[in-house]
Amino acid sequence: MNEHTLKFFGEELERLKAEIARMGGLVEAQLADAVAAVAKRDVRLAQQVIERDRKLDILQSEIEREAVRMIALRQPVAQDLRRTVGALKLSLALERAGDYAKNIAKRALVIAESDPITPMTRSIDRMGRLVGTRLKQSLDAYAAADLDRARQIWAADQEVDEHYESLFRELLTYMMSDPRTIQAAAHLLFVAKNLERIGDYATTVSEILYHEVTGDELEGERPKGSGA
Amino acid sequence: MNEHTLKFFGEELERLKAEIARMGGLVEAQLADAVAAVAKRDVRLAQQVIERDRKLDILQSEIEREAVRMIALRQPVAQDLRRTVGALKLSLALERAGDYAKNIAKRALVIAESDPITPMTRSIDRMGRLVGTRLKQSLDAYAAADLDRARQIWAADQEVDEHYESLFRELLTYMMSDPRTIQAAAHLLFVAKNLERIGDYATTVSEILYHEVTGDELEGERPKGSGA
Image 1: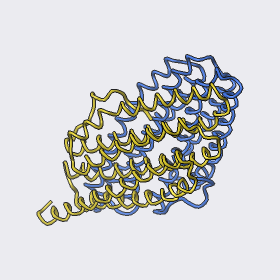
Image 2: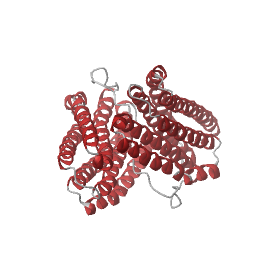
Image 3: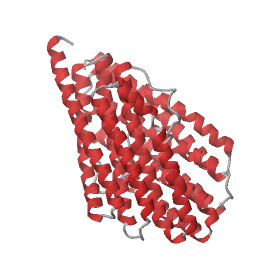
Image 4: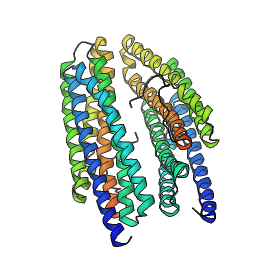
């Protein structure tokens, strides 16, 4: 790239990152509201989350179009190319994380119709906050291109997994001791799983950043693979 | 593109589509084996599926690298650009569909340790075959760039959803009538959900093809959104 193109490209990349940040903020809000809708049995809030998901789809399309245009027009190489492709992949990851938040909101609608399992919704609320924090931290690390932070978040994925495993066992215990809780608990099982997957996307954000900056893959240190 | 570049690009695109077809074939095999591992309580087969998933990750990286290289080097426009980006997105979708197959295989390991719920594993097996057929048909439609076929597959997504809903209710009934089945049934709930998601990816294949060919989105006719 000549100096002129380089300047354009740098500005375009900044704009792309700003769009990613906007998209990330929206996913954080969707997650927090979806979990609140479950915990507070708030049907209206759940419906808002479901409707708002469309915005994420639109933002994703825009980022994709812009990233592809930049690759074709500016022909970036090395780190510039990785950063542009990284933004595209991140937009797809955030869209999917948003889909899981939407799915939690849909389940909130069903859960609100059953008798409350209060201790369980409290556990879900706690896990939701943990995942929300991880997502925020990983997006902050991405925005600041902070590799150390990204690596820390990536290595600490275990905490979310342990939370999920413990919720899974707790929910099964409820189901066994009181069959009337089975339907609501089954939906809460999926809520917990969706939270775990959103947590995986926090990990994905770190992996994308690491690859953008170094050209290598983050591997070998993480306790376990997620495998969907 | 001049005539020379056009020829190169055409050949490269053919190779990319061949790689996608290979990846698709592997996902179909992973799905079939994962479901067989659940139905036959075959721990060894489940482990093979889990190990083989790595191949999909490698294929995905290769397709992504090649697609990005083509965009930067050949600067395709209009349908050529959409087809290249489509191949990239399809590789990501197939990798995720493969992740769900791997997750089914992981659950097969746990399910094999519980008492069999034979009628349920038969239902899972049936749903697995339905999803496998849909995936195969959508990949065939993609390879042949057959829009009519793609639209049909897309509109028939309901069948998989209905299968899932009925399995969900069936599993809950088992759990309620015999608490000893709760743990295995909870894992089967997730197996059924994973199958539904793989079915969603068959729909995604059709959507990607439609967009590649027409530049528009398939929408308005599909009975319901999946929302993760």
